[in-house]
Amino acid sequence: MLVATKDDTAEKRGDFAANCCRDVLSDLLAHVREEGSDHSATFMVTITDAPEDPAWLLIACSAEPPWVNGFGIDAEADPDHVLMAVASGLQDAVIDMLRITVPACPGHQHPLTPVMRDSPRWECPRDARYFHCPIGGYEPARRSRSAGGTPT
Image (tube, rainbow, N blue to C red; front, side, top):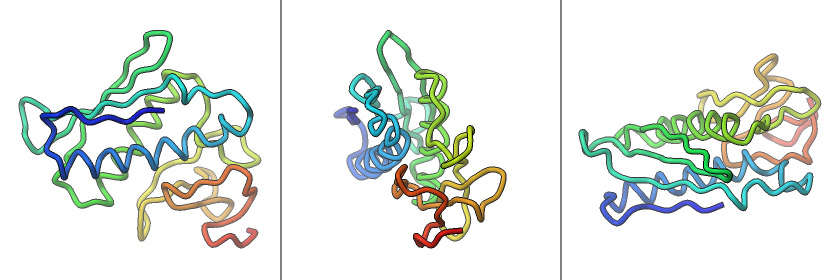
């Protein structure tokens, strides 16, 4: 997995977005690495300034074979909303490009959903009490546990 910012990207905004991308991709690709199929080796994210609006950053995703996907984020939004936009956009891109369900909801066949509660988190779309964890804190080996590590 590679996350890169272009030289013309505003440094502070680009660094924060790159850190968000790393956290989200770590969650999205965690169970893939655990199963021994490393799609992450061919997945790359590039962050650049949006030419038409300086408040926005463009996030381009690429993977082998030559697949490309991308989305924009309002880099001037508050940090939690930037993280939510990155999580939603990268999840869609990874699912579309790699055809995998990520991050996997433990014990279910669907992916977790990024939601904003008190802070950004992944949760089971059927029952948030079944499984939830902070974005950037997904552990695929932790089955049927809530964010605090308490069995649900």
